[in-house]
Image 1 (tube, rainbow, N blue to C red):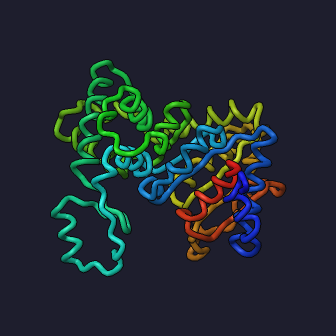
Image 2: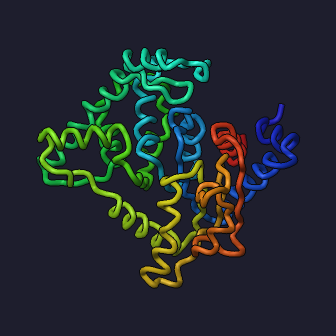
Length: 325
């Protein structure tokens, strides 16, 4: 029996088209790490609800991921799954649901993400209790933190530990917290906890919106991280899906070079995107990687790959390959 069954299977069967691109991108990912490179993973879609933590957490623990950019939904939904997994409901026939059946899910406070329903009371409200206390405590102390830092705080405090319903090793945010991994969460306001924060500001329970640091501060945080790390290591960019989770962090390089005139800043040293978006009507998410050369994000020599497929299938396979599984 091989000690690398997944890797051996992929090498034998994945020979053409998107399958071959997966192997080529994964090999380049490994080469990037082998020469001392660091990797930022940008994560859009509902990958946390797809339980990407089953593979991403180990990537973080094995130092194959060094920073993350994700949507507010991916940040919080990993914790929702951590504390309420047993109360989730799967709807395999989701394509056949009638509007009345969708309304029934609403009445039962089951928030549907494709074929998976997140229970509001067990997941969202349970996390709200813990994170509201963290916001209030920061406000009392006159302190301000980023959205991911508040999640790190409530995980470190053990406030939710009694509610864990999955093996903690399968939570990517717990793994990131243990490594104190840099995370940026652009557009965090477009998330359940972002909405909850706004609601408490509107009712006056929280006195100031400034208790949570904002997107411009996140960009500065990322720029400072990039400048520090690139002095000693090339930095790669692995993008799952499209949207703001990828658009925001990749712009840090032209910001440094073009806006701050720090022209010696190296470009991203590796690029791979897993997406089923198409190039049409000016779509950035579906644009081929070459377009990023014109924006000063990638260079002519940058290894660059696009895998036009379902990230919920591709990313775990690539991570397994990189990990030598």
